[in-house]
Image (cartoon, rainbow, N blue to C red; front, side):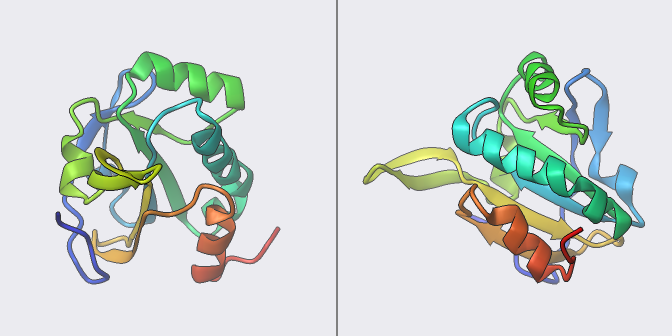
Length: 157
């Protein structure tokens, strides 16, 4: 399985958002982007992580960082998730998991001691030129955004 390292080129993608509009990574060229992959909208861990990103959005935006969340959920479910939890950053649907696979966020993982195929909770920070700045795999939902902010040098509000 391919996993990114700092300095790698992040492959472009185009995926539908919660409203069904196409969003491409290249749309954000010139600014830093946090691309995070999560298993399923409206589950406890994914909700915790999404709400942490929501609560840190002002601080991230102030540093010129855009947040994109990607899951295999259909746009309709993403719209419900965004509405329910007040998520104002783009949530993208990778129903066939092709982007997740290309970015190392889908594959073998351990789930309750068993090896299964699934979404690997991952976060990749891409700089304005499309180069991977930071790549983290198998992250824990709780506390992840706070650790990421520290790594990116973004102080608490």
